Length: 161
Image 1 (cartoon, rainbow, N blue to C red):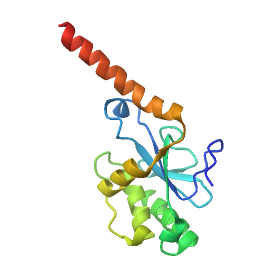
Image 2: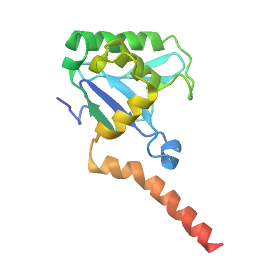
Image 3: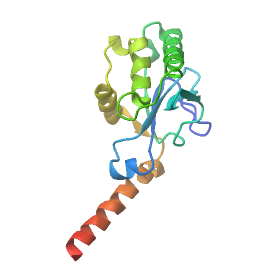
Image 4: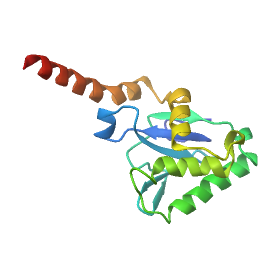
């Protein structure tokens, strides 16, 4: 069960904003994947997979997954997440090619989640966009307010000139 106060998200993909980037594009952010005990793992920099401390702050959204749909159930899930973390501890971070999303996709492919071993960045983004839930209304507002302010300022400046 998800525990928002302790930031525990068992069997979840979690999302948080990236300051600056998410302000311009609210659908772009940083992701991690959680073990069965809710501990978050995320590829947050070169050769760095953190546990329990996301690179850009606590999760704002989460997508709850069903461990029964992972090959091997709970054990298979944890092995896949741990294996993906080990692989990404040996990788250089690249914002466009090999990033936090790639790390999560690798874990989903290792456990053949939903019977698939061909997860992609696009399929992850799409499902995360459709099935994720905000941790709270406040976090939803926090995600979109900077974008709305920037759009409002741009509109005012455009029509004022």
